[in-house]
Length: 373
Image (cartoon, rainbow, N blue to C red; front, side):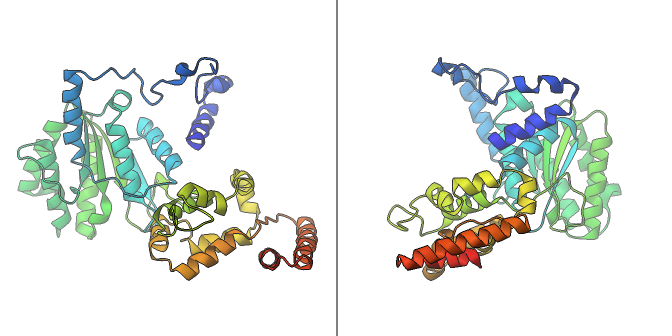
């Protein structure tokens, strides 16, 4: 949340009102009055108590959620990316999410859709749809969603550009009529359009929707796994702390009766990324300059920050590998950004290793030997 807030502050700094940026704070500064902080920060209007009307709204919202894929069971490390997409929705008509396979593009898009859907007072979308329809979703007949699903199916199966086909034209006309007067967010997984004809049909369809001045529509497009495609936001691997937290969440060894060193995902993340390391990694500039052998080794074992690989590693890791991983975690963190720093660090860690060996603390000596390597 803090990272997302600071990102928003930086966005404000480039505006004309940048002189007023410091008046934006994460919470109101009235610490002497605790209830003052009990405000719905993410809403533009107070949330009223449940009433019969509100209960009906909740039922409608529950029905609308059925159009979306389920949220992933394990989802972490994309909070700032969510903030960037939500920010882009204010000014862009089409937002393309790019990245290689396993980065969590569809998980991020699903999280954004549900976030927007639950905050209608802030985002004011009448409809949020996912295309092609998520597995198990069956649209009601004679509805806008049913027509969108039908047209999407025609595009996916097409062996030519269907924009001039009679059935497609009729379906598209119904869609445009039904979209008029409604504010709609369409999330489209372009990876399903895997032929040249279907991809061309999709681009034609999107172009016609966006060029229709009678429609108020935003499009969230999940790019294919290729790196050459243009993207509004290209997903990078999640950071070191998020990698450790995600791994700790899925690992069968991180339980109350499991690893003595870490019995919860948070404890594991703090073991892998102690506060000194987390603070040192705060600036992107420092991350680029610094070299950390410890961090490199740990990341490689835990999936290198690619969410799909992190989850796979956490679920399939053998006990002997996990024990070695915990041993790596006990290795001191060493970050070097200059020759002078390198010489000083070698001298310091050599002295500490010799001291540990002299005191017969051989496990500590082994950890320090890894640090020296």
